[in-house]
Amino acid sequence: MNNTLKTITLSAFTAILLVGCDTPATLLSVPEANVDSNPLKVSKLTEAQEKSWSYTDLLNDTIPGMSVDKTYKELLPGKKGTSVIVAVIDSGIDINHEDLKNVIWTNPKEIANNGKDDDNNGYIDDIHGWNFLGDTEEEQLELARIVDRYNAKYNGKTLSQIPAAEKEVFQLYQKAKTELEEKIGEATQGKQRYTQILQGLNSSHAAVSKILGKEDYTSADLQKIENPNEEMKNHIGFLSQMFQYSESIPDFIENIEGGVEFFTGQLEANYKLNASFRDIVGDNPYNFDDRNYGNNNVIGPDPKGARHGTHVGGIIAAQRGNGIGMDGVANSNIKLMVLRAVPDGDEYDKDIALAIRYAVDNGAKVINTSFGKYYAQNPEWVYDAIQYAAKKDVLIVNAAGNEGLNLDDPTNRVYPNDQLDNISEMSDTFMTIGALAPKYGGEMVANFSNYGKSNVDVFAPGVRIYSTTPENTYEFLQGTSMASPNTAGVAAMLRSYYPKLKAKQIKEIIIKSGLTTTTSVIVSGDAEKQAKFNDLSKSGKMVNMYNAFKLAELNN
Image 1 (cartoon, helix red, strand yellow):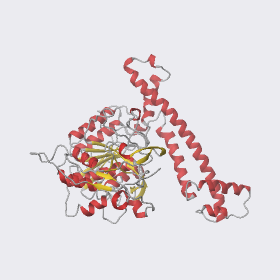
Image 2 (spheres, helix red, strand yellow; image 1 turned 135 degrees about the vertical axis):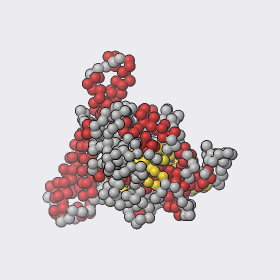
Image 3 (cartoon, rainbow, N blue to C red; image 1 turned 180 degrees about the vertical axis):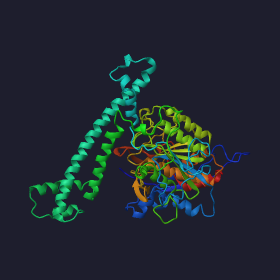
Image 4 (tube, rainbow, N blue to C red; image 1 turned 135 degrees about the horizontal axis):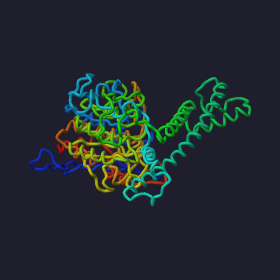
């Protein structure tokens, strides 16, 4: 395809404030940012750029970052923000991490470890948040839970045998059962395939390593093996094929082992029927009034299980300027409230609804929700919580999902969401984020990212994002799960420096101040499937912190 790239042209910022109000109810004037003929960045990103590409400036660096560094350099010197709490609803956070321990929220109304609910909020010793999962880690997907819940009642029956009042539930059960059977088949085949590859890799790698006298070798080294017998030729041929997928056989073995582990986890937990993972929590997840459960261990039973949440938390607010690891989007004004509610599997609607309400009631001004599922049995509980957050002036920043789907298709509904239908929204303080890749042009939309002209608000960096992981480690991870906290970090900073602005105004500022382009991009990783970038989201834009601060200043 022809990747015609564009330069950035910014129109003058103008603002009109409503007379008699401290802040305008609606942004009446916004910057127009268009991308016009920016040259391609043909050189490979440096190691430093790879670790911080989301902070770059598109005009200066030709990388579609959020202009974070430019904001700190040009707009923030001499300014002082207020403290803002960001709630991270996720798998837990390693609150002892060297780059996070100084930015973790502490409940000022709770006395640590005295076994009392000092602030009378219903949670005992909730010093840094709450763990709604207790000591459980693995969990079924929602579709498996649906089949488990209704199998005894509906298995083997047809729609004509079902009372009218139960037909909707029965159809949900049928759909879930059909999809679950398909997924079990796919996971079984995937595990068999990866296991076979792993067996071949281990055998060939051991034989070749012995001959070469080293574990890490190149494809060229294979060709230097002298007088190979037939068995060795087979090993060389097999490994030569594997070098098409990785530059290192040991690294490739590790990846394939991860694949086997992934499919095993699906079969033994996510897709497993007659499972009882929730029993360890001790509540009834289908009773919203049963709330006396969980504990205050926001890391979870195993720090490694908090990998996802720790990575998300670091993106938002890892301590800046300490010379350790990496810098978060937000500075030390921002504190992270930890709400563990996302297991290795699908979250329960009750946990998410209660986590949102906890965040709102305990002072969070931004909530990050980097998770999602395609089935929900009690979405009304979450919808009520989303509306509750809106009434209390709290912004929710949500990941769009990683299946490369058009969310405007009603068959692709993802939870959580704030959609009444494909046009109307139940909340004006809920925003959904798609993911960008670091290569500006036709490949800048992440191949996994969901999209939708009505159901995705804006795009932000989400591919190969470097951030904190448990036990003082750092990793590159990717997903709309990373695009969401990048945006949440920008939102938190806006709320810190412009505290008069309401949550709905912060959302509008982020959306309207972004950069846009009409260039064609590959969608869902399919080169045959292309669309104009500005048709993939409601705003058609990329989050830009610098422009957002400029616009907030005008509307403050």
